[in-house]
Image (cartoon, protein in one colour):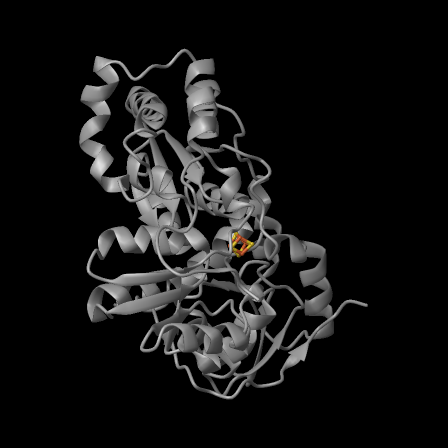
Length: 382
Ligand code: SF4
């Protein structure tokens, strides 16, 4: 079951003692120059960082923003970053697809991915001439590590007549073996388009079995999947939804489609992180809960001050490997460059390009809620 916090910010952001130690160790101080560069930013994070803590955080922020200007670098900040990173040093913010598109188009020499490793790989796939850095090599993903390119080759041997769609939360090796990628914003659209192109009623969608089951409930296409799951979203349950409704009468419950299908069945609305953020902005519910990673609520709450958030605190340990300190070190030392073998990059790009060639949707697709979960085939190599 998810850990639920009734109100107030989700995660301590960042650990002030850690930031103070980090700033001191790097000879950085909250002096007049740093104050002039950063104090106007403080209101963006005042719900998460107290005035007493700010002098520990501000020198790191100033140093990162100076380095970005000096090196013509940009930071792509995923929705699951803590607000200090998301608001204070992120140049582009959004879900993995939005960030990958920015990576391809941005006029910068260096991209620092404030997200996990597969996202940095996706940036490199789309922007091969740019230097892509990630500040922690430990920022992995349970979905991306659940499947390999070799596994996809096995799947294709087993189902030679069906197209293989991969969720973007996979490595470049996996993307290179698949016919097309999808995101949680367009998964149903991609599945239906590739089925039509292949003239088939069956599509393989890897590696997230919950996303696959949730997509299967939205379409007549038969879906075969892989036994992967997001370790964060898999923790939510229909019991959480019941508990939330009982504790917070009238709360509107929004769920990410990486959650198990019975969660979507019980939720009021479901969609990608972009769809959830849009829902809150457009509908302004009095009280809302986002069943997704912890920091997302903090970041959406900042933009919707009139909405009361109940915050589930399921942290992604991989996303939380990214800190202001290691972003600063990564930019200072130009460390942890992401590279991909060119033949793999080219094939992985073909899978992404196949998705980007589909008609662009105005808004991310919502998942219909209230549907009975379907049992679908899960391919297992053993
Ligand atoms: S939240 Fe889940 S899918 Fe996203 S990076 Fe973490 S483990 Fe992977």
